[in-house]
Each structure stands twice: as structure tokens, then as C-alpha cells.
Length: 305
Length: 104
Image 1 (cartoon, rainbow over the protein chains, first blue to last red):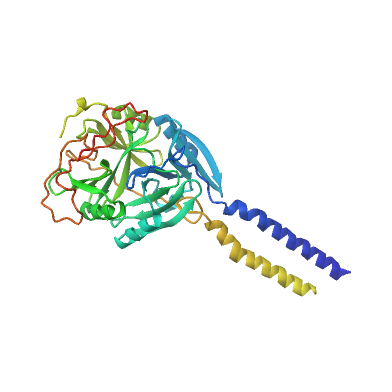
Image 2: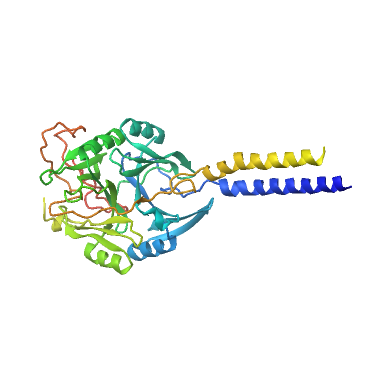
């Protein structure tokens, strides 16, 4: 009698464990499902083009308030597998992703926007990257509806990602105010990095005028400028190389003031770049840096060649 | 089947569950920032300043602005016949300010 009761109890226990596992696995294992970056899907592909950016942030709600207040972005919340993700939209188009992740103060790390460059084959890109001195930070993996992506550190340590978008790449059009317009790599060895990214994306590399002892290069594909490479400033020899992405704004000075009013800070005060518009580097309230870049519709503001 | 065998069976099942299924749960479909196996933050104290006079980062609006570096680079320079390209100028609605202005 006692044996029967014990057996019954154990059967129930086993059933409960099995039920728990069966229920938990789909929830925990569900890969995050992110919207396509191009809707409706297109057949356009622009290898080497900056096609998306993502930010890992310790306070998703506050980050959304900051970027909504600054650029008028709207957000759609997505939850899967315990991940809180917010897709940012401008004019109905997805332009960025924000991911929540706790950041213990003891870790001494800070958020940063991650640049995603278009590739046709992520695994082939990984092979080329490794052959040319990169490190793989996150192995190639599929994101349903988004495509296949991987995250690397280039030979100097700057972090970037590649994405083979399953919905095609965004068209080559002028970014609207509030959208990402440009990317620059600030690095300790522009020469080597230019060769690296040329191997990876097939860029054409143009040398541009630079101050004594510095290098300034422009990377292009499909006859469009895609990014620039600059030497680290001579007075910042210990800075680590990094990619910086720029949002197009209509008035850099006003937007810089707005950044501060919303809790961010200014890292590089506005100054006039060669194209005639002002450029500034700012950080959101959690320290994630990004650039502000005026791009006048006409050349009337051009002041420097 | 006695109680001891049932207990062993239950224990084996629990161990198998923990060792085989759960790791797969945490690392399935994950990647950059999407799971508990990763996430990405830059090293603290990034130094983004120091951009003095003459430190330009933005693209040109087109035209030829190349410098003559003399070669000897790790990368292959674009052919001399190619002028410096710019970013796209056509707006999303199609009412742009000149279309493709990257020049070759």
C-alpha cells in the first residue's frame, strides 16, 4: 500500500517536471523575432553600406524617451526569450534597435551604438575577417525575418557587425533629418584598417587631405561614399578605436542643446566640417556616443574644401 | 519496479534535463545582446574628444578632393580616374537634389 502511494507520488512528480520542461523550453528557447529592416522586401543589396544600428542600454524606457524627444523616433516593443527589445521607427521605417541589458556598476563598461554593414554572405565575411586579423565577438546566427548577422572586432579592436538582410538593403537615398546619414572609423592604424575593410566589403579607398602625421580616407561602394576613416587624434594616443554613427540634423547647435536638456552630454562641440554643415559628437544619458551632422540641401553653406 | 529504481529514474531525468535541455534554452537563437550568453558594452571611459582644427570626418559633396599620398599602402587606392564620391542626394520621395552625385 505504502509502495503504491510512493509510486503514484513519484509518477506525479515526474509528470510535473516533464510538463514544466515542455512548457519552459519554447518560451526560453524562442529566438527573438525582429522585424525586417526593409518593408516591403526589396531585391536591393549594397555591400558595405551601413544599413542598421543597435544599442544595448541598461534603461530601455529612459533611452526611448531620450531618442524620441531628440529625433521624434517612435518605438515598437518586442519581447522574446526574456529579451526586451524596442524597434525604433522614423516615418514608419525601422532605423534602429534598442536592447535592454543590465549593466552592473562594477563592470566599468558603457553603452555604444553598433554599426551593421551589409554583406551578401555572413559566413564568407567571417572567413575573410578572420584571415585579415579580426576577432569574432558573436558567431554568425540567424534572426528570423531579419537575416543572418555576426559581430566582429577589426584588427585594431573597433567593433562592428555584418548583416545579410533577408528583406534586402535600404535604398541609396539621402537620409531624412533624424535618420542615420554617415559613419566614421577613428582608429590607430587607418592604413591597415582600410585594407581590412576593403577585403571585407570590396570598398574603393580614396585618400583625403589630412593634417600632418594623420591619415584621412574615404570608403566607397557602388559609387557612393559609405564611411570615412581617421587617425586617432594625436592628443588621444590611448583612446581605443571605434566606429561612430551620425544622425542627420537640420541645426547641430540647437540639437546639441537639446541633447543636454534631455540628459545627454556633449563630447565634441559643434564645428564646421568641410561639407559646410556643422558636426558634433554627443552622448545619450547612459554614455552611448553618436554624431550629429548637418547636411544642407544646397552647397551654399560650403566653406571649406 | 521498486521505489529505489523509480527514484533513480527521476533523478536521471532531472539531471538529463538540466544538462541537455537548459543550456540549449539559453543559447538558442541568441547572439549580440539578445540572450544571457552575451550582450555588449564598450570598455568604460571611451575618449571621443580631441578633434582639433582640421579634423574632418564628414563626406564631401562630390567633386575631386583627393590628396596625393604617393602609394605604398596596405590597401589598394581607387583608380586616379575616379573622383571622390559623395553620399546619395536623391530623397526617399524621389524629389532629390540631383540624384547620383558620386562621380566616376
